Length: 285
Image (cartoon, rainbow, N blue to C red; front, side, top):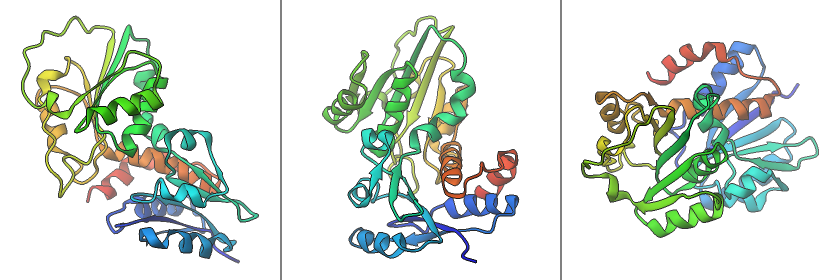
């Protein structure tokens, strides 16, 4: 009997936590399945898919940088959400060998916010730092949930183009990243009944990258700080937010959330989320 197996592919890939997450869920559920990391360089993408497309036990792969856009040209079908975002992070093989691409970033990002989003708010605003692939998904997810967006990047024109493409409705704003770097004495109005988010959707603050310069005087009281970086998990951005009293959400929340969606697509069952605390403890070792 062939054991169903899936991969996560990227370049580099050794740092991926996905094998640990999926392996943990497979073990808890007693499912005979495997999930491993595969190093695939950009020039090898077509060969990789050609090799596994005909493997009946291969059920698909998660896709990380730098393949999220390039892989779209190798697929037979692309889910409308992934098509809109212009990126695929999950490929599912059908029984006939057809490959379908999905993007789980938006739903994975929203998962830890769902209890908050169920409440009614007078106004919702999000400050989003970054203009890459993750930012595209986050912009789409928050615009769909009634947020006014401020997108900050090194190139404000790119930020504006993202908003015009993904969230053309609404009075959204594009600014330079440096706007948030220095203190401000802006007097925020009464934010009772409002929901404010500050999101780092960039690699800034990730190990080996420059630190994100964000002064928390730019955030209204009660703003939720959300950093999608997972290495380190407790970034300087989150530490500074916590120090001035803001609630925080770290990158594992999005990572586990999007993995849960992919796991169900691969193995046909929901992962055992009642063990999230144990899983998180393993991931931060």
